[in-house]
Length: 130
Image (cartoon, rainbow, N blue to C red; front, side, top):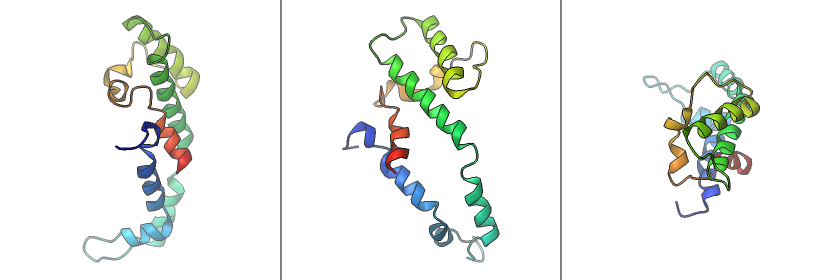
């Protein structure tokens, strides 16, 4: 993307928010055979359910952002044990969910070592901007 790294997710977040407006959902949704729009009751149910667990999701994003910034910061963990200690400390402190014993999701957190290095917070920043 040809924009600042901490803005790169904002346009897609803005589009997602736009798509969740009732009028837009009505226009975008059609039955595959009848072309009828979503029934209003179903549409209202979807809109009410959109924010279920948003707090837990936000805490997870804050946890991952902090983890990313710590690993790429001035005093990162020195070895695998230090990384595990960091995960074990930060996850329950920020996300309010205990980290299962020996669970280290860093092995599958691809954003840590690609162009997002120290910029994962951009996902939360996109929510603010949108």
